[in-house]
Image (cartoon, rainbow, N blue to C red; front, side):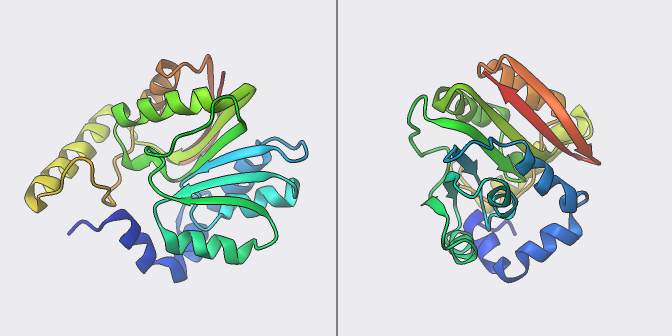
Amino acid sequence: MLEKMDAFFEKRIADYDEHMMTEIEGADEFYKFTASQLPKEAEAKILDLGCGTGLELEEYFSLNPSACITGIDLSEAMLNALKAKLPDKNLNLICRSYFDVELEADYYNAVVSVESLHHFTAQRKLSLYKKLFRSLKPNGYFVLTDYFAESKELEKLYFELFEKLKQEQGIADNEFYHYDTPLTVEHEIAVLKEAGFSSVEILKRWEATYTIIAKL
């Protein structure tokens, strides 16, 4: 049975950090690497999509302690864990879907997301990426670290299986359930470019996980 996204993570909150750091290929490197790509200037404004317990933010604050973070996540339990970890940091945490949160235009120095966006269709990502594009300052950029399907055939299969499970369980399209449906990295780059980003580059790869930077 598919689990609702927030319930899925709430059940696993006690072991989440350990699971991510020990079970995900390259995690001991890609959280640090992702953080290293974010702005270093004092009080930089950063938006973190699917911030969870803040594994990338722990690394980032060690590089830029005065950064101002807006973190969005569906799981209140994850956000509470993040607040407990970083009680003295400038955190504005929002417990909602990042698809539904209105973003101020020309506001953020950078947007970041780590291991969160592989649950959604290209169409849904396109609307989100257009919103991110508008929210960034002129020299702003988006750093995405996530895992991707190895082929178009696998991407298609993931979505077909998910649709079958949704139909069997009577799940509506606007509900968030935990099931991985990664795009290929080529498809992801195409969606980012369609959203308006002029330069999209792969920075590094760990097996199926890539770090991508998308610039205005």
